Image (tube, rainbow, N blue to C red):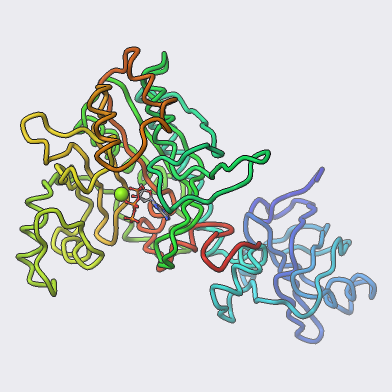
Length: 434
Ligand code: ATP
Ligand code: MG
């Protein structure tokens, strides 16, 4: 809007036009206040009824909350106003009136259920807390992108409609593709691996993944955003270095550029950027330590996945991010490489936050024969993946990589109780709209 001034930029002495929402109207009799809210903040508009035109006063004070308004007037210093300035209006215009009954209260004074908030996400995101999460999410993505670029990665975008899933199986959403069966992709895994054999060598992707997981938990979505990394000529430990680098870059970007949002969310004093190198425990050490906590109902044995309960016990014990490396081959996917001297042990790793898994990755199997054998061992038909396996016959370098869920990164960073808080329009078992 030409000539518009943001609320936060209005300085005493200026004549401004602000545009935003009628956040609050307070009528004290001879004097009334309209608080206008825009993306930058709020500003008070003062109506002195005896001294102002009746129409002006009526427009500015009869407006329903959350209507869209513009106010033109002079900015004056006023220590009693919430932001130390107020506008003395010359004109007020209602651009879009809001119905007096709102499905939720954007001032946040009245709490609403998560489902009501998600049904009315536009209104929900007028609340500072909800909005702050998405400003931080954007900053996380910027920090991560910049970090990737600084370590020589090229951003790619791979197809989300595919003929076969990454790991096959039940977690795929089928769709109809011109009369043929196709699927929504559950991971860019195979495509990004194909890129390490291309001239690009070192790539990252930030994009959606789709998983028809039936469970309904506070940390699973059926559509999530994944940050994927894959690089030629690195091993799993070098891939972990990059993983750690992106995480730290995300936290640093937020600390540096989201002070206000952190304050809104209650992190003004204690937002900790992880400084120390993350411990790298082998799977064997991890199960020993978790068993030693005495927190589990049943001891974990070799070959067991870390249960939610085990992740929690270990997380409490370690108290920060940590990697678990050297997983049993049988519980890691076929594309993860095994140790030559111990084929029961894989070069897969997970990055854990004390609350949950954040990343899975590993060194990949780049040798054609071993790769095809791995498919067969996991009961997958290598012929279905020929587009992928065949490229391993034409010079595929050793490589490694990993994938994060963006929502889990934001959720753990901000200690959100539910992953849905970190998605604009979550997709879960119940929710398909909006
Ligand atoms: P989990 O065991 O927690 O279900 P996973 O091991 O199945 O996760 P991976 O296939 O390893 O998940 O995916 C890599 C990362 O993507 C996970 O570490 C997580 O951060 C994120 N992720 C995976 N599935 C989901 C999901 N359904 N919703 C949100 N994020 C997910
Ligand atoms: Mg995993």
